[in-house]
Amino acid sequence: SMGTLVAPMGVTVDSFVGVLNITNVNELKIDKKEVERIFTIPVSYFAKFKPSEYFVRLEVHTQKRSEDGKTIDMFPVKKLKLPNRYTKPWKGREHKILVYETNEETVWGITAELVYEFCKLINQ
Amino acid sequence: SMGTLVAPMGVTVDSFVGVLNITNVNELKIDKKEVERIFTIPVSYFAKFKPSEYFVRLEVHTQKRSEDGKTIDMFPVKKLKLPNRYTKPWKGREHKILVYETNEETVWGITAELVYEFCKLINQ
Image 1 (cartoon, helix red, strand yellow):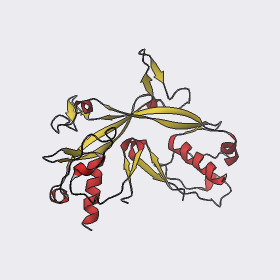
Image 2: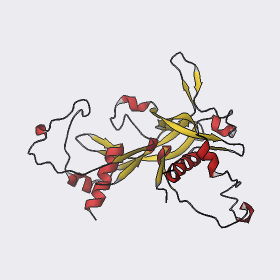
Image 3: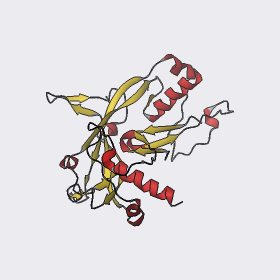
Image 4: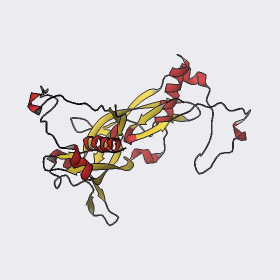
């Protein structure tokens, strides 16, 4: 187990490292509903290259649009007597996103985060 | 310790329950920079009344506006060869927000979540 990763949007991911006793990834039976494609990148690649760092920003919205275009108040700030500033979208902090631009595929987000943490663990 | 709460926006809160040996909350020396006002509500209130449930929705934005109104690409989706859908704000799931409308004060969000979890613990 590599523990629990807390991603933005309040998602947590519990990750586990596995060893596959296979000679070719084509031996794997994948669920096409869950997995589009499998590819491999040597661990040495991630040990050698550091990921690039980018940022995204989070906003919390209290309203949404219904299918017929009407504004729906999901969280009635005024009725609940909360400060007026909560009527506008709440701006969260900027969140770092790691990106490995490999020849094979762009590895980013939660995947890159897990790879990065794994490399730190095996280097300890 | 009540464990770790994962709030939206990727924030985690480790909470602890304390017992104060005081007769009046005015005995507390509070840091005005951190705490605006202290008030008390009996635990029996929260045992009796269930919180209301509302929702907010999270959006992840890859751009921001600079002070002179220019659009800054914080996460260059096209340059990183990621699918086009990531150029628009990413819509997250709706996130539940608990609200206790007490006579004293509206208790909501992370505070309400911690109160709710505490009431569950003492009822076990």
